[in-house]
Length: 282
Image (cartoon, rainbow, N blue to C red; front, top):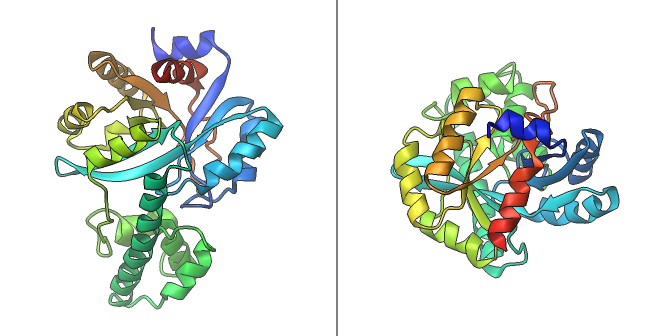
């Protein structure tokens, strides 16, 4: 059945890819729940980069508002020479190995941010790490925080310009992030009772090669619905998922409406995806 038909036959919708202020999003867990309720979503997952703090906070709020909150995280992997983002769901967020991973990555994010700031300073931009840390306000420091400081200091007009000129891949202040071994990442999530999915596979240049490797380690699914996937792309990865007996997931990848549009709940993702995840776990 085509994805659009699945959505139309089941009015309940979900969003399993949202970022909060605990990583590089603009919305607090409370604000995310409020937006999800306004859009009548039945379930969400906050998949912050390398931390589960927001998931823990949002779970209690979700109960109050009748919204299921699935534990989530987004990890960066290097697979077949390509950067791959891995989404973890339904794992025990009190898992020792996952907590240790999050603490390790938190420290490496600070180191990376310092190096990026230094690279920008060498290009004549008068910004400091202290400004960036203040902008992060205690959450894991990410490139969007650096972009925000660049805007405030008048070096760029928008976050888009900051990434296009300096912070994006292969740009002048591109500092590689620390990653975890693919096999270890999948084992970590699965040992904690969860499922693993490749995020926005259309953005991965070596998708097929990376997919085969990750499937061999026990990958559970693909994020077929994503703002960067048009209808044809969704259909393609739906067929790929069927080929490898993989589940499907989807979400807005919302970071808080930096461009003036709140993406939570867009594009529509059917509740059926969540039901099939639970069936796989059972």
